[in-house]
Image 1 (cartoon, rainbow, N blue to C red):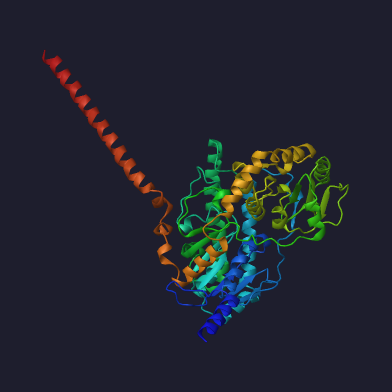
Image 2 (cartoon, rainbow, N blue to C red; image 1 turned 180 degrees about the vertical axis):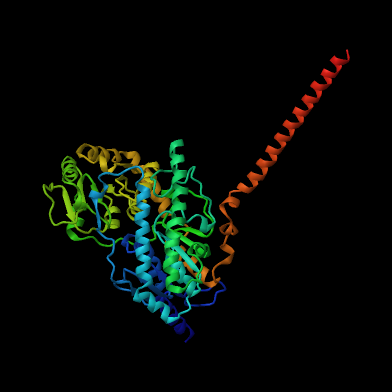
Length: 524
């Protein structure tokens, strides 16, 4: 009888999966809210697996976003944001024809406008009204921290611990809130597109970019978010510039194997590759195209936001001519049904399962815009890359892959038949393959999966009511004190005072000696 009961219990546990535990071992289903106002699908690819994983673990997860789950698990509730166009296949390549060295500052203002629009749209939305009206006491709130901290005002009203999520490398304005040092001598600013190895000129540019962008965020983005949040909730709400300091934890879509080692506090968790799932079966024709590629495959994809079909005719024809000269087969994510002069060794499609293609053993080169999702998948699968960054963090990702020896950079302005062919042949060399496989090993081999790590930390934050022991006191320091500039100032004044005092004493002594000598001469 007991054996039968144990068998039934084991079968039940196998069906429902492990139940969430609190820190002291008590079983408890958490109430979790996700707030994601930015309409970029590539960003949500990082957040979605974490939210689904929490629901599958048995927690109640409510998600406010532009991207409702098509087949949500039990416990996953979508409250969709509607009435705003999402950012997919929305970037015309013509805008990258005439770029300048100060473009990253212009991109800041683009992000600023996007953040303001997303904030305003979300605060006025029926979705947020529904969340506020329900008056649920959430155990933890997960929200994106990107181009606006508007949602920190919502979290303040709901009085729940906050975990910030960054779908890219940390922005220049993220460091202070997490009590982290800004070290521009070797940590490259997200917008500038340098690796850890910088020249003196590069370090100067990096220092200027880091501090200028951080200042611009404080001058423009924070007041804009404050105005919208206080209009919605009243002028008693503190500035979001202060509220962000209450961020308990930050999940960052990075991994040291690709982006380099950094001095991270325990409150910053690297979860690079959390979106990478188990391989799925490929379309029959695509599978056959890959399997029969005796000389390998070059895969071209410029992500979910960039429309490859908007390539200028000269650049498009240059790529097509280069492909014709390759013995490898080529797969290209092309958003049109047809492609003029398409060679026989090319396969085109409007949508392609990027991760599943990249991990096919016959894929030898990935031509990419160096978006972080694609870069992470290339690192995971161990595929050398030809990176053509277009905007945002893509320059940073491209520089990191080049510095790691798993890719080369082909600037968009330099695309022609010969440069495309040269870049592809370069990364077909064995050293790039070996480096890519070394990075792949480090990327895959971790103490726990990225998803399990994320879930453990969400549960920890919720069950410790905000994990107060994780919070560094440096978060509340001014940068002047944080970098010991006050100490250097005092020590500098002491040294200066000592030098001046000694100078005055020596001068007085010299004058006294000279006067004594003059007196003796007169006496004689």
